Image (tube, rainbow, N blue to C red):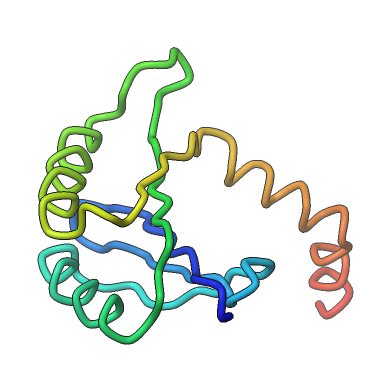
Length: 119
């Protein structure tokens, strides 16, 4: 039996980034960056072609644990999406430190040093 994939959404006012896992849900790959106003029609296409079990959407918070300004737009999107696709699980992910974590991971992997050596 083929496992279902997870779709990641990095919701933005203008552009929304999408990523998708492999069918074993081990690796995630950047899928596309699309105009947010076309997000729902793009998702319709993906959901017709892929077996998606879950969608993970960033939960943008300030360092003082307050919702960021875009959260209202994300909530509206989730409400509309859930009306159309009630069986797909939606999870939120606190994204406050993800950029910093990625930066430090790159340093640990030596990517920054390699870049400096090319100069």
